[in-house]
Amino acid sequence: QVHLQQWGAGLLRPSETLSLTCGVYGGSFSGYYWTWIRQPPGKGLEWIGEITHSGNTKYNPSLNSRVTMSVDTTNNRFSLTVTSVTAADTAVYYCAGSYCGGDCPSRTFDSWGQGALVAVSS
Amino acid sequence: DIQMTQSPSSVSASVGDRVTITCRASQGISSWLAWYQQKPGKVPKLLIYDASSLQSGVPSRFSGSGSGTDFTLTISSLQPEDFATYFCQQANNFPLTFGGGTKVEIK
Image 1 (tube, rainbow over the protein chains, first blue to last red):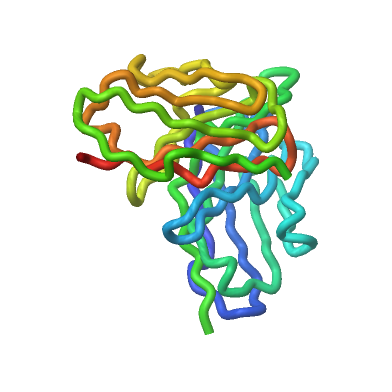
Image 2 (cartoon, one colour):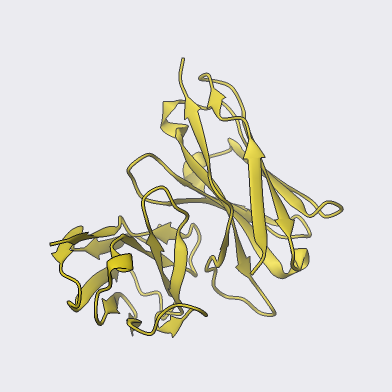
């Protein structure tokens, strides 16, 4: 497991852009699939997408083309951007890691950031 | 997308009880299933991966079983610290998806 610490703006107005970053400490940055997951207040978990250390991405089609993930291997960080936010994007956003030591057909999340509440309100 | 359906949505139980939670996938996912525990205001914690493998550090009273479309999480003897919400997650088909959660409450 690694330690994840995330930061970013917590209050946005509709149509603004959400930006979050997650720092990875104490482990192999290249050994994980880095992921963003969100949880609306009182509701379940939604997978947003993942990125590898080399920048390969997979996104949830439910967010259409509003999501972009990026990686900074120099500083062991990865980031999430969601454009044109609405109230439906209000949620606790988590960064998480799924360890991969070789061929990894599955993704399970053994390392999580502390979570960040992002509220969208006019 | 694969839909994950958990039942029950909530269960009331006493310390020492055996609790079983079910998760059903809308299509077969082999054994690519994980279970998480989440306490209020806290981060989800991985309990079980690959349907039945216990994550390091997780008490042995937790166990998972199943394959294909039907899975269960069992807590053999409920402890006070186990009152929480439990989520299943299918781990192999993108987009990855989670069940709606099962809240284990004190009877």
